[in-house]
Length: 444
Image (cartoon, rainbow, N blue to C red):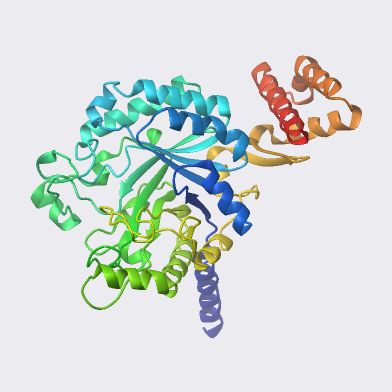
């Protein structure tokens, strides 16, 4: 009997340990949506972010220019978490095609740049602020329409993943009329039947149109008001809401799209001067919250990725911006650095590992061919590696290498790898050419 108990206890202990060591990827939101902000952080602190996040709202020429530069500046060997908001359009207007021009242009840029994107559009729909919110039926039509546009542009799951990105609490606008100043309903699970208010489940367009579940949540202390919040679990799975538990029922991997914490808290009533004093002199509060975030991510196997909202639009609490707090952890503008973020980064997974859950979801693998770092479709990994090795061993000049690739495409790929079609052969040859182009560019 004791032996059985010991075995059961030991197995339970092992299972517990496994639950505490989830491998996650951590990314950063660029402070000002610029490429240079990410580059400067990585250079200054000798880190490499596996995920980089941009929020493009509104969409315009500057956004287009940034997306075009991403492949050659930040590279093809990381994932881009991109939020594209349809500006002031409602969900019904999106479904009717009023934002199609922008979506189509964005999808074309992703296709031509060959970047891998987690696509977040019309996010936080279950809140009250945005024109796209509080209308579940129209929202589902819009999401289906946008995903169909991506497929018409030639994008597949190996290029783009669709993120169903919700707010941690269901707060629809009263009477279904969203606005920044609208009155909202606290649509808890207990209140839903009585109030007949929509929760995030009502917006779900179907498994075909959702690749992962996303969620936004912040810890708000006294950066600009008397708000109080708790640990990550307290916030995202709060009593009466149980948002995280409900998300898990969809059996989709989970991405924390935005997470952050303020550095300011104290016992007495809010005072701007006191908040400023605490912000300038205290680091332990935010570092403690960062370690709580690390432990939370490690303990949740369904949460595979997180994106830290490394933004402080208050500019060190000098600007009293509506709704914004001192969320940043590495802020080159204000020279603030919270070393707890390094614990969060170091506890995460490196994207170079082929076992990365995110790469598996895309159906891609990481390769480093003599300094050319990029992702390739999983089914092409071995032929790309084998053929590259053979080309390099038997040719020396760039022209000879390109000729060898053309010969392989025309004559040999389908014979060497009989499962491949002519379309596959073209795709493999194109990858090899891209590798040579990247190496040539690096040598300049």
